[in-house]
Amino acid sequence: MTWTRTRCLALVLTAVAVLAGSSRAAGPRDSLKKGAPELQSISALAFGPEGILFIGDARAATIIALDTQDRTAAGAEMPKIEALDEKIASLLGIEASQLLVNDLAVNPLSGNTYLGVTRGKGADGKPVLLRVERSGKIAEVPLTDVAFSRTPLPTPGTGRSPNDVITDMAYLNGKLYVACLSNEEFASQFRVLPFPFGEAGKGTAVEIFHGSHGRLETKSPIRTFAPYEIQGETNLLAAYTCTPLVQVPVAELKPGEKVKGKTIAELGNRNVPLDMIVYQKDGKDYILMANSARGVMKISTEGIDRTQPITKPIAGTAGLKYETIKGLDGTVQLDVFDKDHVLVLRKSKDNRLNLETVELP
Image 1 (spheres, rainbow, N blue to C red):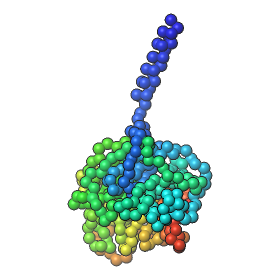
Image 2: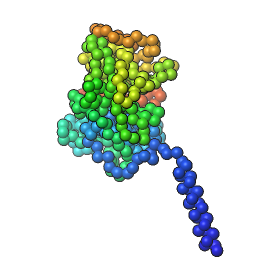
Image 3: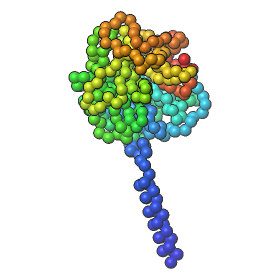
Image 4: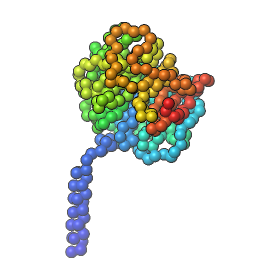
């Protein structure tokens, strides 16, 4: 009798547990399965919910969602590492000249930094994912027996280089926004991928007027972008080569559609924007943008809702105003570290890559 009652009680408890599990809402990590992502490249990184890292694999035209299992604040240190490239090269057993750092992203939960690098040059280069802890410790992130999911991008373009296929990403409110090139007539596109991933639909083609070139463009790749709310409406602020800054309302990003972005600034030709963030200081909003030839720009968003679109050829700069931030020369990558600081990766005068945490200007 005792055994029968115990067995019955166990069956009841098991049923309750099953019902409780089935009623629990599925979380972002529930769609991930253990395995090996088998990356061909790492061209772009962005963090999503619960320590999930999105990896843009341009060579494979695929997006990977990876569970980093990195969800705990990792101390209070402000990262600062001189000659980071040499330290990474030593870890990987190569010369620093054989290392390429493609992107970085700060995990907002832990404060640890993730780097997507290429070990070796050209077709023989191999992707490596690294974690730089707040303490300065550098370690390779294992990519076997990890929880992940993937989604391919249909009709990928070849671009001027393989990395043009996926140039930047940002996660916002359950969706991953991807700037990419396709092989369609309007090559420059945004793709909006709900997460957890389903089947990737068509992208939204983006046409812009490029003031310094004096023409409409549909093939120039978006180099970097950031979400920004204007009068209660979410927009993507996208920067292109030479250097138009364009506003695209998220509500217009519908699969298979063609939209025309609003050019709100021309920030100078013969320049490639490298990375950008949006931040707030003293109650005002700013864009911080790293560039190949024009230093780090601090761009005021004041009056952005009233800015007239640039629709005619111009010489020099126009639209939103900016200032160049001294002391950040050579910055190639940046990301928000916390509400008061930005993490920058920049080249020193002796051409070494240093990782620094600096106060937001």
